[in-house]
Image 1 (tube, rainbow, N blue to C red):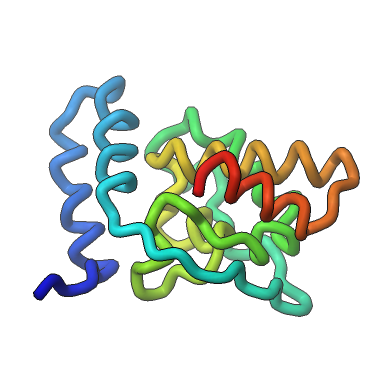
Image 2: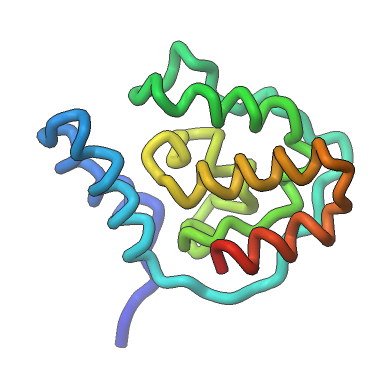
Length: 143
């Protein structure tokens, strides 16, 4: 019987990344994210009054290249709080939505899936698409 991957075990699986050269980290982290069990589930309802207050600032990131994605997250927290992340992190304790990937340990700084979802959500939001349309596009592209 397999046990669900806890947030602690996931974070411990990222420790070997620190020994990798910088250019290899993103590839390895994406592999780790992709290795998480994907569990289909509904998108969460965005919380009323949600803000980007917990989204990591560029100075707190281990990978400055990801700062662009975190800047986008700060602009649309009410949208990404209503999107279920498709990289598998939704099965981890403490992860609620795509917004969660940009808070706390900042998993999105290493995961190309989280970053891709952010770019897509931001682009579609700026085009005036509804949350339902953004969710459908994320599911089609990354689900």
